[in-house]
Amino acid sequence: MGVYATVIPRRFILEDGTEATLTARDVEERLTRETLFLLWVPCIDTVYSHLVRQGFEKAVPAKSKGEKYSLRKPLDNTWELHLRLYREGYIEAEVEVRREYLEHLTAGKRLNVVYEAYEYYREAYNKLHIKYTPADKWITKILDHLNVKLRPPNTLTPWKPIALGIIAAGLFTYALHRLEKGKTT
Image 1: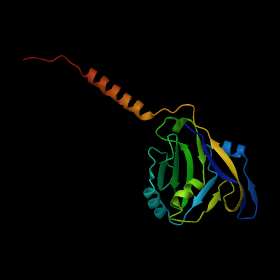
Image 2 (image 1 turned 60 degrees about the vertical axis):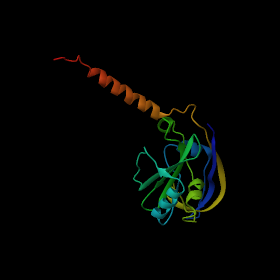
Image 3 (image 1 turned 90 degrees about the horizontal axis):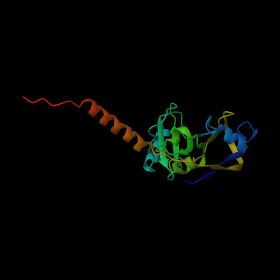
Image 4 (image 1 turned 180 degrees about the vertical axis):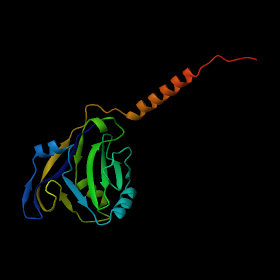
C-alpha cells in the first residue's frame, strides 16, 4: 500500500484576469466535498472510445452524478483513476481507493486530479482546458503547482469474498430450513 503523489494547479490566472491560490488546507478540506477542477473536451464520445482502448472499463459499482460515462483504470494495488464524462464535454477526474475494497466507500480517500486524465486522453484531444469550479471560471495560465500526497487507508478489505461468504451462508441456511424427513411408500 503506497502513497499516491501528484501535482495540481496551486497558483493560476482565471479568464477574468484574477489570480487564485490554493493551499494544502483548501485541498484537504475539499477532498470529499467538492470538485476543484473540471476538464473539457469538444467530443466526449471520441474521448470515451479512446479511453476504452487505453484500458479503461466501466466503473461498477458507482454512484451516478448524471454523467454519460463512468470509467475507471487501476493504477496499482491500492489506487484507481475514476473519470466521469458528462454530455457537455466535461470530465471529472479523481484518484481514489480501488472499488475492490470496502474502504472505497468508507475511507474518503480521493483526490480531484487534472494531469492524469489528460495523459490518457491527449492522443484523442491534445488541448488542456481546466475549469476552476469554485469560481466557475476557466484557468488561462498556471503559475505553479501544489505537491499533493494521498495516503492509503490503514487497511484494505476486499469486499467480494465477504459478499460470497454471505451468499453461501444464506443458501446453506435456506437449504437447512427446507430439510424434511423423507417419506417412504
